[in-house]
Image (cartoon, rainbow, N blue to C red; front, side):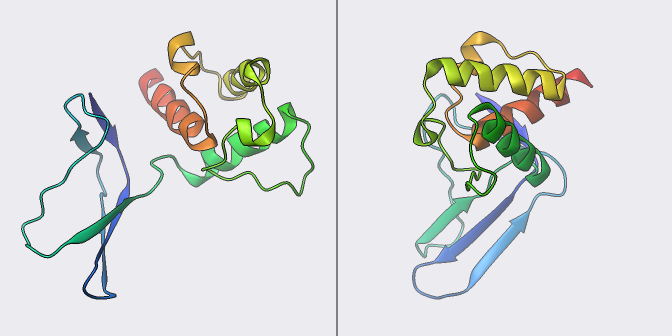
Length: 137
């Protein structure tokens, strides 16, 4: 499976506190060849820690968060961020279907049922929305 996205990658070596940040100004193609984890080969022999940030735009994540709050009747001050799992907010499978329907209506998209069923976090929803919106263009 290959994914095209715009993102930034931060790398920090375990031997120092210096962090290198790489920003992809143009979409990058990363393939995991059917594996569940991505692996990267670094040219340097020092051990590194790799962190990949959310590929979705912050505005999309914020919009998804607001829709989730509305669909689940959460308080305005309830914290819902990219990593928030719907189940952690008390959502059951019916609530998740209603969240997906609200997202489809708000963004003017249609999510295939098998893809929608895999959405568990705000981040996953935002990334799928951006992917579907990109396909519409």
